[in-house]
Image (cartoon, rainbow, N blue to C red; front, side, top):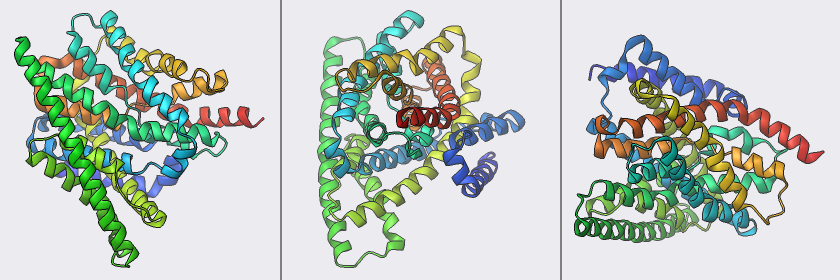
Length: 401
């Protein structure tokens, strides 16, 4: 409890500053995640607050789990299905070809630069760092000069790839926790598949039934717009909890519920997306604050040249080459392919997935895994944050000229 009130004060200050400067932060070079990480890092350096916060603390773990469930649900439910039906080819290539190749490329680079790690942990790193976070490069999505087709593809990719990466991550973590016996390993894998599959079924049922219930209530005028914002987080947490209570994967369930949210009313879907985005932003700001406050100070003593090289390659070639391969035959010019390849920041999903690893395995025996992921996300927060606005403006001018 010693650090509770300072952290609470920092969180309130960050929310206040973001609220006052939200428009400038959304379109400027200095982004909200950069602000949160900087404030957290400065507080840690000046007051040593990170020494009083344990990532394995049940309260911190619970907050992280709830945040991840809401983020997965919000990302999945926020996809514009009408726009996706007309422009599904680019995001389908990025998700179906680019994402798996990015994971494989991450493992390959890890074998070269981090040879002391077992392959299963190299795969864990690669999978955690594969999902992208559009919020870190929000200036790209807000720039009308960037072709709508490109913005839609990046938005759909970032909304869906964190959930797609979740099942292989859960399977890898189950394998990492398995003793060396092959029989036991097979049993763990079957258990993981069952946990993920049934969790998805629970999510589909909750998403469909919950969506129909909410849709019917909206058409009958039972929902006050002021309280409509409670629907998304409520359904996400309910789905997560129901799956968790039955020993199934609540994160997969929350993601599946968001995908299958059966809301037909365009007005209601727009309201839920707006409110979900606002609630998700609050969670994201808090998570990035904790990232700068706790994770970065814990990780930096372990950083070395090989980790820096891995992080830089993860942000560049590990993503850009698979993206280029996935977009062959789409008719996009080289400039557009490079722009899409670079516009893949690592953010909230990577941080929350890392928190799951810490919760299950701790940090002490897996310092390399922890340090590499933290370094990659930190570099992405800075590099993608600084470059999003000027690069999207330059790209938009070139495309319109």
